[in-house]
Length: 172
Image 1 (spheres, rainbow, N blue to C red):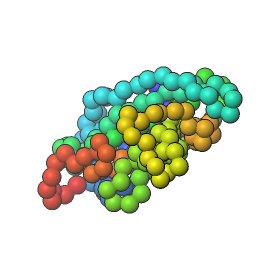
Image 2 (cartoon, rainbow, N blue to C red):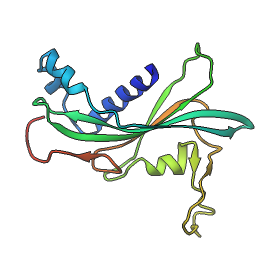
Image 3 (spheres, helix red, strand yellow):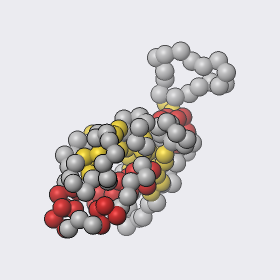
Image 4 (tube, rainbow, N blue to C red):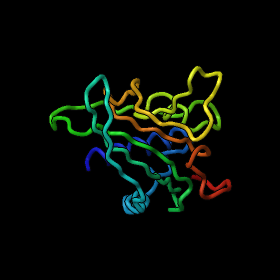
């Protein structure tokens, strides 16, 4: 549970930076307002998986969900979509780094880095010239970073499943 909260906080912090949202609006509110803004319905999905990496079994948990961002008036402005992969069945005393992965450039979600690069599964594209036709195969990614670090893929606001909830020029 503690790891899930840390991942959610990391994603929320990154989402605030990506969206250019100001933390000063939260700093100006009193503690009661801040606590109210931090509560949100947990509509995440969690699944368990196993893959083979370097000839060894690797167990991991996949979590997807949305993290909202509220303005100082308590209205939800955006919701940031994330997919997190955390390695399971490791000693409780071990520590693991957390890598946050975002798409690059305007309008790009994390999907290309997710199933085309660093995630635990990948869609093989063959030689990259003669692309396969749907339905696409999904296979274990022998180049995933999950063996070394837990991963969180974030869709910046306006890409993938992340979205602006409340349009307008209202102060954050």
